[in-house]
Image (cartoon, helix red, strand yellow):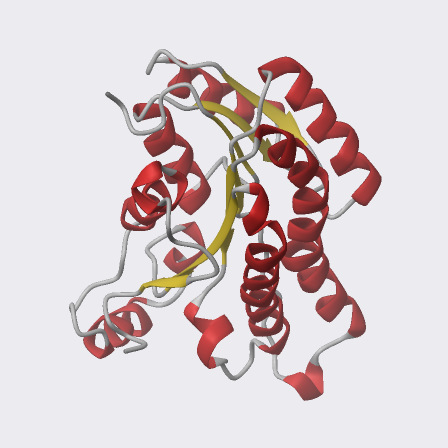
Length: 248
């Protein structure tokens, strides 16, 4: 029996990196996948086709996750097309890194809007559906930066810290309806974003991590699978660090 057989997962920002790995892992475990992206329809179509090879229904949607009304319209459409929504993974995110003294209002607003407001939008739209189903799992993709802070990333750190507070609050509010909410705090993960860093910087990061390597998107996807499945049926309001020990 597959861990997510018969369930439907909605994953934001899923065409690459961690989001893509989560979508593939969930599909392997039997979940039907609705995913969003602000990228081209071609990337959506390619991921759809890959997910469908696992025998599940998969549909990609172009969406601006930071738009409240558009998000509600989209969630209603997904619910109508898939029949249910059991899992929400708030993964959409961006960075605009710079020191506070140099940070523009636009750099602050854009990161907080995409990383944090989008999670509010989707949770606001999905919780009534999950409440009627008497169950659901919400997973916010936070970061070790949201726990520990980081110079030059005040906007990103604030948005990721906000995701933790949001999950804890939703866990308390919606627990009586059978809805769980948790966070994952990835550390240094080898994605397209980190690939732009100089080689010496990546090597320095690896040396500072107890496991002596950067994580992979698949490492994070395994944690997401645990939180999405009934294996974590008594886990809510928690933040699981997936960082190789860098924040221990």
